[in-house]
Image 1 (cartoon, helix red, strand yellow):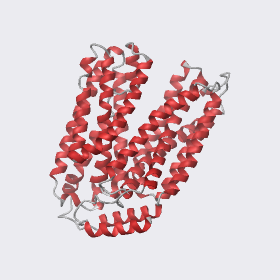
Image 2 (cartoon, one colour):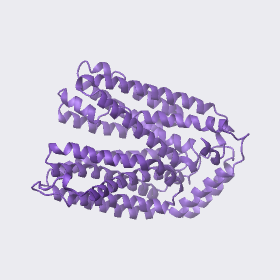
Image 3 (cartoon, helix red, strand yellow):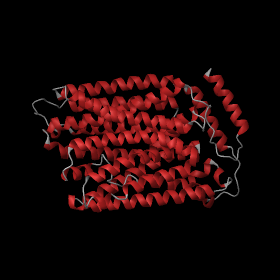
Image 4 (cartoon, one colour):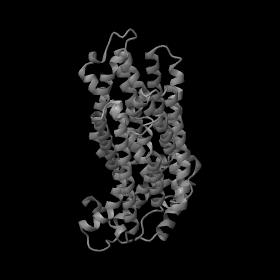
Length: 468
């Protein structure tokens, strides 16, 4: 039934959508419930696996080094993983756009297996009496562990890009795509909220670190099996056919006017500006999970319980944001709604530098208040790329945006080193608010420019995007 309905939808849309209009109606209409649940299940498995791996590696290093001594080896390990990811991230977009959907499923499964393998390799050197240490691990094994952990993270990122930019648009009609995006993000946030609570509950009842790491590795392997099974439940043949049809239709469009760098840049630059504005949000310490902010708040006397409650409240606020965005988009439109979400986020955090002169608790309250608008804007950027970027370039655009996010994360880390110390955190907060304001202005200007574009300027051939 899905195949016949899918074919009829493709024919109907090819007849109704003019060649000069952006391809915004790419899906099959209403998403079948089993297909939607399959998509949500894959996202949940990927998010839970990444969270579990993030918990297991620090525990192993603490057991290896005996607590306080784990800070430097763990930081070195994380820096190595981030370095590998930074080198490989630019290639993710091209892979997400060009690879067959079946191959992307295999990569997702391999990512879970790589995470389990990295834990098990570290586990070989873990002794309950603390006899071993990270320094005793052979260099070739350390390199293997870094590469496996990096592969697990990269696999998760690649799978997310593929599902958001290729699978979701092919499954859902344009009118139903925002709601599908919201459900996906809701599932991811729920996994991020539930997995830490479940992990903490289980860890408190397991006396052996080895048993805990073995349990995490087994859970990752079970996740690999579940992703493999779920991926096979997707209508891959039909989705691939639709994906090829959309890309062929884009490539066959007639050129509107004389080709040239000026027309390419005026077409691509507004979307690039919006992606840059989103990336700037990562150049901030005003977050409930930022390590610098957490250390500052703890040093100012904020209890661990209050920090935990703030994180949970922030996750719940993110889930609220996934309900806000579809309604905001329906009322204002994609670009105005996204700009409104971003400005509301900035307004919520603007009083933080002044508020730090008093109680640090005010910062936690304002950060929690800003979470719904942050996640609404995060969803908005998914819609912007899905609607404004050709299908053949969506993965590349998302991959480029991810690289820019990493660059801004490195920038704020460098600033945190330059402004180290609790007495200078207020300066960091002021810089963060300034960057957020620049981000909002950049996005607003880019969105206005995008809305003023003519239909001809918005339909340049995909082949010309490479010149940008």
